[in-house]
Image 1 (cartoon, rainbow, N blue to C red):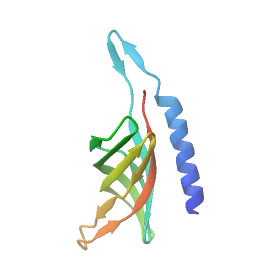
Image 2: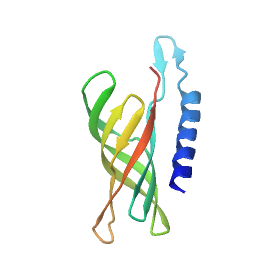
Image 3: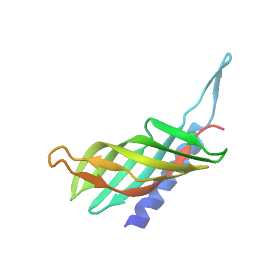
Length: 123
């Protein structure tokens, strides 16, 4: 099941990348879209994440490390919800390694997970 979800996720990401990387020119203004879509798993936990605001340290052209917010849709103990995750992340070219943590207000616990993402952008 996890393999199917990862395969579907990356197929969708590549389709989105193909559609949004065109740059539109208006006079001297260039418009483009940059983002990240990812999937993470934990104990009885699955989430679909999108890249939110992040702070990065650029190591070189292809590698950067940072921390960011990940708006997410998750499935936890067979219950669907939406939550903002906080994650350290390592970006290498278009592949993103994430380890989001999600806070549960009701119990005060943090739900850890790990996952991969695909970053799409106009170069």
